[in-house]
Image: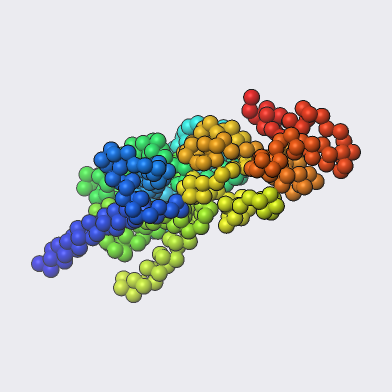
Length: 345
Length: 139
């Protein structure tokens, strides 16, 4: 039977591509660990690893060891986690709203979390955990506001979510501008501006432990719900007949995406484009079936973020805000893929 | 420019304006002196209190050479009417064998007498040279 055969072929190719993507992720993470502004020869590198794993203290290589294990390693892990989280959140929301232009910020998480962080920096100049706490809290508050505004039932439900998202986003962006206006120009304003552009600088293992639970929870939850995304696209009645409660699933997916995105923004600022572009690239590679699309987005998103962060910290002596780099690398890359494969579909 | 005039090398010469630089780049440069213009006072970095940044590995930290730039009529880190004093102050900090703090204070007094016709007292000079203390930012 031809249909079964082609379906088997498709599944085989998906299953074959996922390990390949994992290899890309591991390779880029390892290479990124060895690249940095701090110069060390390969001999010193080997010495540092040897000392770390055998417990034999190395001589005079404190700085090198610190750079590799305390500066680069947490940064790479956090970048991979954030990239993975944003990508799967973007892919899920695109599937939920059946709109390829949806990004994780559609419901206002990023702008709400950005406002929370700006407020935290204004009040505490970045000392302590208040900034991160406010960021996460306001991320959740903004989505709550969006959902409570979008009470319309029926065919236009998707549209009403998106419209309330636009309203809430605009309000929080305006409030953030207000905070930038009253912030101290020497100290707080540069901190807020740099934070809003996104950065993995000065991240350490404490940040990793902070975001690992919420992001893993969100990613695992979304992965478990991925087949329901396929069913939701068939319509409300079909979903009910197949035993899936569309409204509950919608809320669950929105909640999980929000937790992931708010955690990402809390640790690294607002990073756009990743949640929008990576799912599209994966759709070209894997196909539109969410079974394969969500895991692929997760892995490729992590790899992409690791590579871009590597560029952000190594290209020039100063740090390039990563939000700028994701836009500059993601958008043209996406245009290239889209135009090259346009003929095939 | 002030660094040139006082015989110091600007490690961050490739970076222009106010840019953020990662700690790793600082480890690579490992400067002998860090002069703090604006933002957190030097004492914050000397106490290694900045989140995500380990200043304790730098040479400048070990020699306690993270220093706040003085502020008189204006901060000496920006071009102002006190600018001729900046390279002299840098020399008194980095090459104390050429000119120590007392000799610098004498030149400081003389400059203010000549330029502004103001007689500076010693405690005023002290508050200029440790501006963060005068502003109450450190005890």
